[in-house]
Length: 140
Image (cartoon, rainbow, N blue to C red):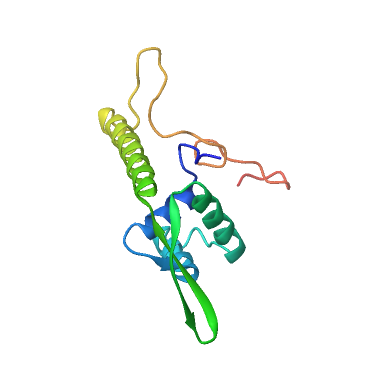
């Protein structure tokens, strides 16, 4: 099975964690948490399932093993194919961010367009523009 494009965030971050140097599972889990600002906390079962899949897809490979305090640590590294996939995905994301940033800079918030549709901030329920009714009947 080939890695889907675009990459899912956990896959992207696992490949990113391995881009600098080979790492063992706990190191990858810690690095992914740091890279995501704490939003993504991989569980060991999820990580090793992903590493098995990425190994089958030849994006990651085992680098070496060592015994630490009686426990085996297996290190993984990014392959050249993995580096290519990560590079392509990074470029795809960069283009998307660039396009969105350009659009956001193109029109100041709150300005109107032809046809009378505002392109500014959305007036969502629960905001000052559209209060939400509480179950008791009062306004939120």
